[in-house]
Image 1 (cartoon, helix red, strand yellow):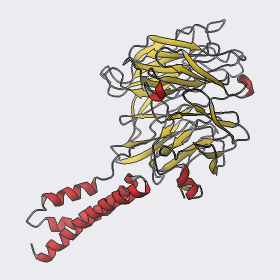
Image 2 (cartoon, one colour):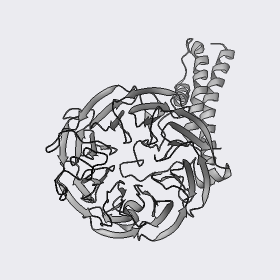
Image 3 (cartoon, helix red, strand yellow):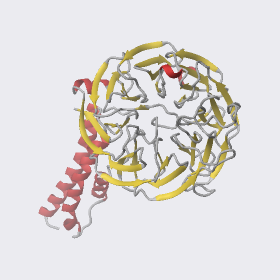
Length: 507
């Protein structure tokens, strides 16, 4: 090999390696997402590699050091550290991301958020489940998964908004999807759970909720699933059904609902098979056809090493349950207050894990239409504290799930956002932000001490509040109603208003 060829090849190798080093150095200094920069480096590295190919054909071979630099640059685009793969961010529903690119200071310094892309969703309804964001290993990219009320599941490139795939599940959907081990799980109002390949949208398997007497039809799945491996057999999907909803019915439904554990793709017992079902509600109404599950369950291992799945039930039972996730046996039940005729626990639980904030057992934070935020012992179900958000019942139908970051619990009610001390239940701040009320759950982003809370309202505005003070740092208007909760991942904020998905980043 001539000296000119050697110099050219070695210069290209140094360029690729230098770019990676510079990228890591710069991103560390400005606290930007390293993976975003490294994606750009990968594109440059591909060009470098292409230039090296003819040079590499001639002996001697590239040195071990050179190969190491090339491999490092080409494969630099790996999964970001913190995405949003299910409703509430994680199985504990913390609603909190450690993403550092979007924080109270970066938004303020950039004068708010700028739209990076948007995409139309054929919906036909202002109701829209919340989006989730996950890294698809098969696609080697971060993907945003959405589902419309009309039942169309779509996958978009998180950085550009390019449509990767879409598929109709054939029925209306109110529940957010969940990503787990390369598959997307979503339930629909016909009572069916769908498992879709996250890279292609192909159906891997389905499970249909059976009609259990006295019901003649399957219950509606409005509960977003939570997914995990709780016994070493593989993926298990947990979700509830609300029974068969009948508009105008005095009892709200023709049959009560149930809570399900179903095997996921790759489980040793087979794909999409019933593992166990629970419906032993003490209060099913005078005719035995009421009480179901509307909210999204949380999944956590308690201090004793037992996996618990925690959720709430609807009127008239209106209770919080913890079941053994492996076999469905009951661990405890907590009955909420009765302050009116309609007291569904429509919001899912948020879990403080064992040991957090000085609680050895861990804590369940949950609220419903009674207008009260409860803190319950994760192991026993005993009430630790409660805080009255408002009058409850039909006065303000709060169905907002709380978000937890450190010792701060954030929950919305009516037109207000509350920040509570997670240990005592005391109010840190209370900010009124909305005109027509809030149904969306809060989402927190940023490093400790510099966090921002995002919350959408029924007027179509996504607000950003400083987590420490409650002061407004951003206000982003859309053309629709924001009942879906936001997702934060890889330096971007994703919101859905029913017919459109938006991606924002600091300007």
